Amino acid sequence: MGAGGLHGRARGRGRRLGGGPADLHAVGRQHVREGDPTVGGPNRGTTFARPGALGTRGTAQLTVTGRRRSVVRRQQEETFVAFATAAKPWLLTTAWMLAGDPHTAEDLVQETLVRLYTRWSRVGHQQPAAYARRVLANLHTDRWRRTRREVLVEDHAERSGGHAPDPVLVDLVRALQGLGPRERECVVLRHYLDLSEKQTAEALGVSVGAVKGYTSRGLGALRDVLKEADHV
Figure 1 (cartoon, helix red, strand yellow):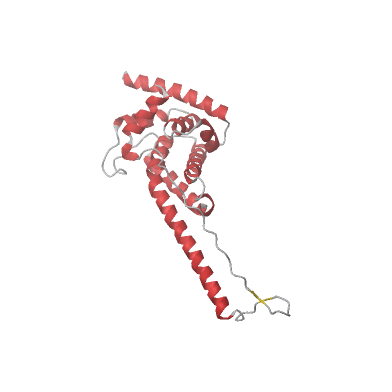
Figure 2: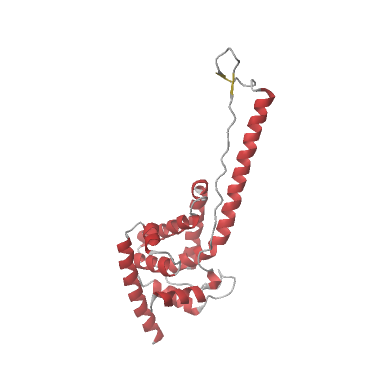
């Protein structure tokens, strides 16, 4: 099975778990201009204002600054919620393909979104989807290293509201668990999320050459597993 076959089976039949990455646009940061808390006269050196020495004008400046900060925080909250809502379906599907277990996938996505939220003021205006993919891949790798074991696909009906996932997608996820973690990550990122070799290398912290090798071996092994399954 080639890359197109994997992409078609995962993308076409896995819609209940979410599609590929949405085209997400982040809102740029709003810079806040601080008021000057100093006072002075024409013939006197400038000094820092004492408590209560700002007067009505200084108090107004501080009030406006506080309001602007509040607006910025509210805008950041809104853009994060919008991103998380749009990204969660494809993050869940990606995590399920990587972990093979829907409950573990939920945990991975929740931790990914928590980490993204704590850094939203820095990454929200850049490429939050790329950052989320990188965090998710790293969390999966760390979890695999801790446990040194993989859990096969469980019944997904409860998490999906009583609707069982497509059997073909279940077979694909189960087959992916037969790959090593790096092979699995490269196959999923390259042929489910449609990342380039360079983007995959950046997300996993490896070289482009390593991505090529992992992907080639992963697709070869996956092809063999699915062929055997078709003859059972």
